[in-house]
Image (cartoon, rainbow, N blue to C red):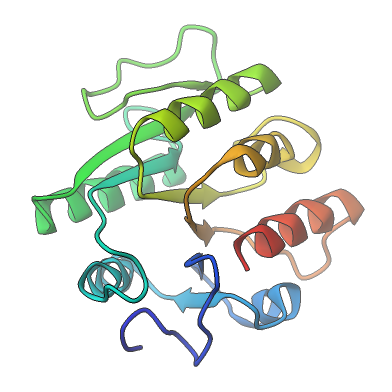
Length: 197
């Protein structure tokens, strides 16, 4: 990896798809059109740093929004998103990092100050409002944590409403890539991949 190019593929929208387990299915879904990252948080930090240093990719990253579950919600995605957000915020002190977690309960959670907007899992309008919020918040890049079970709609399709409205690049970590997805799961994953390619 050098200067934001991974596996020799540069994305015209500066989007990077990341995957946290196997690479075999992801390459088939995305067709090699986007940038791919296979690895962990330090590798993602390296991509963010590389992107920040390379003006031909983007002038500078000043604000990063993280979408996924967030602590104190008890789940692996919440732990991952929180650790990733905090790691990047600590490594790149000039970058403002904030989170948009997904609530699976009406009461929500007692989130820390880093949380700026809460998505309501099953409420489609919440995803539209989140897109509006991100678009007016000077966000340079969105870091999306994708897992079928955390977003509302069939196969987590509500997240597509948010993505379609964004005016900034998205880095997506695919926490699950199914070897045999059903038609809805495949459609959601293909649209996420196509949107970022």
